[in-house]
Length: 159
Image (cartoon, rainbow, N blue to C red; front, side, top):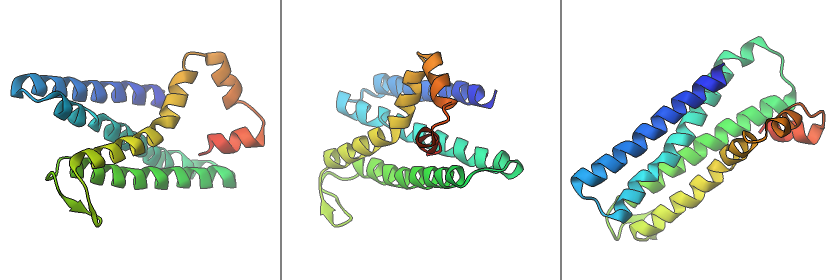
């Protein structure tokens, strides 16, 4: 129930954002490069939404159940990693729209450099989402993976 509701909410937020970018692009006559840079903010939205879901899950579900050590460590690791990636995504995306020859963190680079840093970091963050999206096409495989009794698979799923 909650995961299905999250997917619907995620779909609406991401779709609204992308449609708003297209509308602003047409009305304000943005260039293609600028439009793509603004549209890439969708990766930030995905990471923020999944971080929010993880925090809500930890706040609402975990106090009432007993979890193994790997589940607790995996959850904490995931939340901290997503938060750290969100901070760097925010910095890189802001620096993308900064001055052409800006100096940040002692690095003098143009906005394209920072945008590519943002893209590579965002792709790294989206790997679990792509994995989950691919499993949606094969429900039997998804069930087999999620109900596996292998300690290795269960440890991987806790991350």
